Length: 268
Image (cartoon, rainbow, N blue to C red; front, side, top):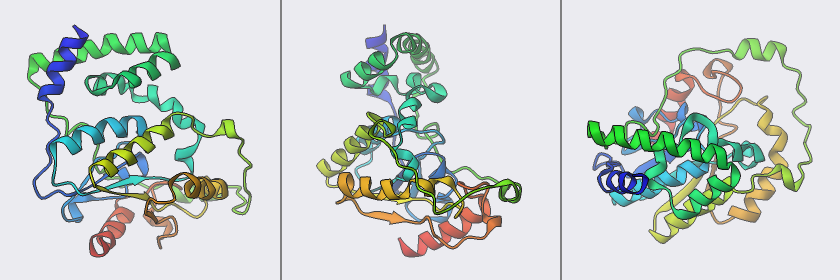
């Protein structure tokens, strides 16, 4: 039943974008609240809070198959995305059932090896979700795999009032503190774009100067140069923002997103 339902869904899955969309952005909550695609021409925000590169790869495969007009892919890349805790995102938000039909053999092997009991439980949920899609004829994915999120609140004043932070302090991360397998899916995304002659660009969304991601800046830059030195990197961490442009220390609210997106529209 799993194999048959996966095959049927994969053959009918709809990842089509509007014909004018030739640029997309993928990533986690940072780009989700940064790129207001209603203000950026020929651009679609398909990032999703909590997304890992594992699921970004699943999305990207299908999007590029069905949208030959896409010629540029922006991917969020910041200090926290290289850390080991990213590896735990395989099991966050119950994403396995959503993307089950698009997994390759090695994806199944990774899930089963990492958490065999969890994998079996998610397979059962996945079969149920597959059958529901088939019965309801629901094969459109473009409205459920991510998008810009409008945020109209801010907690920045309260956070800054209670923050005790030394922006110069650096953490010496050990090898086992870095992502082991999720980062490999970012490399797969890079290779996929290279094979299709599609331009991939890493972006770092704006965040507050007191966001704790700064603590990993040294190792992040070293890691980026050593592993992704040929990939263009648009670094917006110091993009000029007011405190009122932020939802919190690492995310913009709608005011900041509008400011950034209007600028991005003119520049890119």
